Structure formats: structure tokens, C-alpha cells
Length: 433
Ligand code: FDA
Ligand code: NAD
Image (cartoon, rainbow, N blue to C red; front, side, top):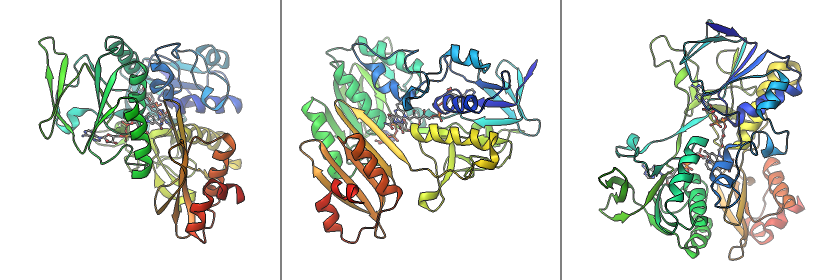
């Protein structure tokens, strides 16, 4: 049993959707392209799952947020794929790859061959069990990576209005799910090992603003601590969490957001006879054209580790939607129009929205931090200055023009001759450049 395609996209997430759009723009012929996805629905904008999807009123539901609405592009519904002759092979997990035969084998035993393969397998949520904590399969413990997880969380939340939740992890999932739970009238305690929220990106001063904002909405923080075990009722439901220092927090539900692992296992060569691609930074290593160590195979999105020109071609694996969209489109362009496609010149871009707050970040957060703006009134930011140049910028509560301005100073690595002056000028500095 087998099928042959010219182009195969392995994975059906954000990157897959944007790759399909680019293939269509470049006039892929009907029958040449397929997407194989373990998920049972066509690619969608994953960020909606921790935002609109969890709203108590008028929540976002498919088909509203199929890709590529996130960048105001066409919305690729199942009908769109049918009309373009792009095959969606859904609910299908690929279990092995043979790079010599250019073939993938699905769990159902079907062999699918390709001339070009784009690996867009994304990442999976880390489980508590990987840190030696058991019991996260309980019905009121939630993770959040895909739409099935989100549906589960919505159901658990429905039974918890007016009750309490513990959120494990102080990163993106922790912050965004806390906001969603509070909006659903659930009392939240956040538990995380670091000194402050979003330690990977925020400075202590920035985190203090968000923590105060959350506290005003009733959120409690337990910092510098981790979960060590659960207490359960006779039906198996979690009734309390126990922390490393012995603290016991009674709870009606738990949300876990403790990071991700890129889905590289099909290509890490660890299984006997398994395919092997070069790996780096926990992902599949690619060049500036998103091409892996096998010239017929490309990798994009969360699973790809690629050279960032702006950082001297340092290899980075980014876990954000903008990079998934752009690396996907670049790979397709490199495959279909190799002569007109150079190396990707990507400006790292992250964003988040919680309650009525919203921020954007561009570049890298290393070097000297220069805060600016009006912290109490939710309009503030920070520059990161390294060797006399701006290499990162963050802004909360900006307008479209403000965000464009900070992106530009990072992209051009604007020169800073006087840090005091930069602090005084703040956002104005970005408009003067
Ligand atoms: P993605 O995870 O989207 O897709 C991978 C696909 O591959 C899935 O369909 C999976 O089932 C499939 N797959 C994996 N292995 C397979 C196999 N062996 N066989 C078949 N299929 C397989 N970013 C941001 O910048 N701003 C934001 O606000 C948010 N918000 C956000 C919320 C939530 C809840 C999550 C989980 C993530 C975000 N992100 C985000 C991150 C962003 O969504 C993420 O970077 C992109 O989804 C990455 O896109 P990919 O296509 O690489 O992976
Ligand atoms: P994260 O890396 O943002 O945060 C992980 C957090 O887990 C850390 O801040 C830490 O507090 C905590 N942690 C780590 N080990 C722990 C342990 N053993 N016990 C308790 N806490 C522990 O990851 P995440 O929040 O799980 O997000 C998952 C992925 O989803 C990331 O790739 C993220 O980029 C993506 N995402 C992005 C956005 C966005 O960009 N707005 C929103 C949601 C999710």
C-alpha cells in the first residue's frame, strides 16, 4: 500500500498551513502536494488555543482560525485544500522515515514517498513525569498543545467556575492560561521555580508590572518552588498539590505549562535503522534555505534550528508562530524557486496578549537592559544594548507604528552612544532613527 507525491509536508500545524499557502501561490499542480498530520483537523492558528478558544463568551472555534488568518492571509479551510488539489492526510501519525528511499511509513502501515520533504512536526508539551512527578493523567490535570487538549481544558474549566486552580509553570502557557482561567471566574495560584514570571524574557522590573496586574485580579504567586506530588480523591481526581517545601495547595484543577521538546525523534537516528539528520539546539539543523543535512529534506517551525543572520548566523530554535510562518514560506520558496531564494534574513519576533494587555518583542534579550516609559500606566518597554548597538526591544501597549519603530531599530542594530540619553528618549529614540 503506498502513495507518491512530489512534495510532502510532515506535520499539520502552523508551519504546514503557511507552507501550503506558499505552494499554492507558486502554482503547485493538483495531486503534487500532501500534508500528513496526526491531528484530525486542517492546520490552524495554534495561538488561538490559549486565547480566544478559552473565552467564556463567544469563544473562537474552527473553522474561524484555520491558517492563515493570523497574518491576514487567506483562510485555508478543508474546502480550500480540496479546490487546490492538496491532499490532507489527517489523523495519521508517521512512525518512521527512510531517507534513502525517500519514504515515510504511517502507523496504519502506508508508505508515502516524496521528492521533497518538509518536516514541520513542531513540538510536544513536556510532561511532569519527565521530572519525576507522577499522576498527570488525572482527569482534572490539563496540558495545552493542540485542539484536543484545549477541548479538554474547556470541559474541566466548566466544572470549576467559582472554584480554584493551580498553574504549574511561569512561562507563556502559565501566563496566558492564568488570564483565561481568571476570565472564567476561577481563582488561580501560579507555582514556578524562578524568581519571577517569564524568566526567559522578562526582566525583574517588567515581571513586577505583570505580577502586580495579575495580583489585582486575585492571582496568587508561589515562586522558587516546584510541584512534587498530587493528592487525589477516590475517583482519581486531583484535590491538592504538594510542593517541594511541603506546602499543600487544595485545588479543583491543574494546568501544566513547563516547556516543550521539539518532535525530532523520527530523525535522531536513535532507533535501529532509523533516519538520521544533523541536530542542534534540540531541533533539526538547517541552513539559511531551511535545508537539512539531507538535501531533499527541509525543516521549518518549532522543530527547525536555523542560522539567524542578525545574530552572526548563530543557530537558534525559536518556539513562536511568526518564525513558523516565515521559515515555512522560505523553505517552499527555496524548493520551488531556488534561483531567486537567498538565505533567510529573519528578525525574531514574539508577542503575547493577556487580559487587556499586549506586548511585542523583537531581537535578542542579551546585553545591558534600558527600561523606559510609564510602568504604572501599561505603556513601557525596554531595549537590550550590546557592544553599543540595540539588539533587542520590548514594548507593552504600543500602537502598530510604535511596534514597527522598535522592530526597525533592532533590525538596523541602531547605534547607542549614550545609554542615559536612550533611557530618557525611550520610545522616541526608535522614531528618531
Ligand atoms: P505545530 O506544533 O503547530 O504543528 C506540528 C504538527 O505536526 C502538529 O499538527 C502535530 O500533530 C504534527 N505531528 C508531529 N509529529 C507527527 C508525526 N510523527 N506524524 C504526523 N504528524 C505529526 N507563538 C507566538 O508567537 N505567539 C502566541 O501567542 C503563541 N501562542 C501559543 C499558544 C499555545 C497554546 C501554544 C501551544 C503555542 C503558542 N505559540 C505562540 C507557539 C506557536 O503556536 C508555535 O510556535 C507554532 O505552532 C509552531 O508551528 P509548527 O508548525 O512548527 O508546529
Ligand atoms: P515556557 O518555556 O515558556 O515556560 C516553561 C516554564 O515552566 C518556565 O518558566 C518555568 O517556570 C516552568 N518550569 C520548568 N520546569 C518546571 C518544573 N519541573 N516544575 C515546575 N515548573 C517548571 O513553556 P510553556 O509556557 O510551557 O510554553 C510552551 C510552548 O508554547 C513554548 O514553546 C512557548 O513558546 C509556546 N507558547 C508561546 C506563546 C506566545 O508566544 N505568546 C503562548 C503560549 C505558548
